[in-house]
Image (cartoon, rainbow, N blue to C red; front, top):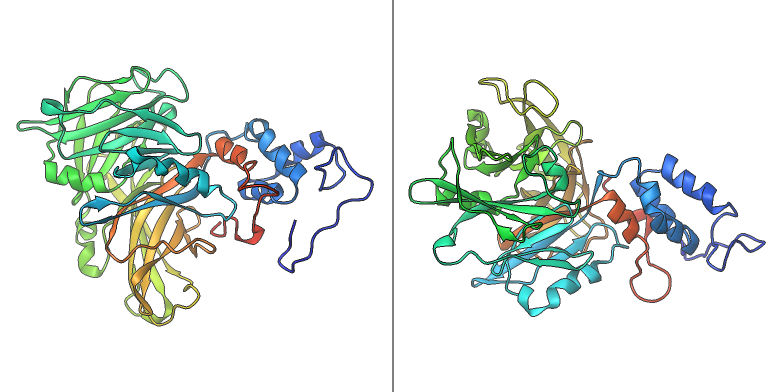
Length: 440
């Protein structure tokens, strides 16, 4: 392992278990127990960076190590896709850790069918692309080609959400396996709001259903389509103008429009930009996050962040909200952002770009006077309410206002720990331990 000083750690004397034993002379079983019981995810990453033997143990025994918390999700990067003159750029994956195999992720988009596709959403390790609809897992290379909805079945402008097995455990018709997924689209017809669902188990779209309880225009759905959907407590949520569209996941297809408080819908007058929907990592509640530059502290690079939660009645999985008090609990904080190297002057703009829903990470983009047309990415941890500059992350390469899509990418903990065994080319993997998950 190379240290920052350039020196190399000496191997323990006396050999070891095999030719890849670069760590301490402890039995494999003892090391695996330590990894499983005492270390969190970022510590496991550092252990995998220590030597070949530890990397092999961490990735090879990932199932045993992650058994205590298999549903935990880890943010590993984001996808950014630009558009110029109506032509979509190839989606670009930007990892948050220098060791992550971004080349293997981006290789998926080298194929011709993906070059003109718009990235619609990213959730739980899968991506949804439109044009010829596809749902893919860039880490495994699995691609599902969905039947195109053409002619009278063409939905026009729509909002969509990707659902996996754990989202539907309480649904009337749950998926058949843990790898199954469903794609839900909501769109506008002349006299009603409609909904269709694609099931990976059936390999087909469901018949068109009528959404009851709410009517949403195609223009509003197109705006919701540009933002990521959130799934919480048995329902899908989209931000629609000054309200939140709620769609139940059961067979009723019942929807509701829940207006946000007036002081939030007028937030733009006080400098708050469009908010994003997220899920609290502490208790799983849905929330709306907004951010703006602190009025009196332009030179200190301070940002005011406020979060409003959706309250529920009954507890547990019950999604019945307290009458008249669905959006009441809120909190806010002031964060000081670290300016990137080479940036000086005041911060002129800050906006929210994307969300890693399950892990509670929201991406911020800030613009500085010295780089008026470039955006600097930050990651906001909702649990700790801390925002950190993404050190070691390549320049997003996105001119101000030109981003067509920005989606956080996260994987379940088991898949992520398993991926630590992959190499970027021949020889030892290259990791800068001090840059791994710098925002935690």
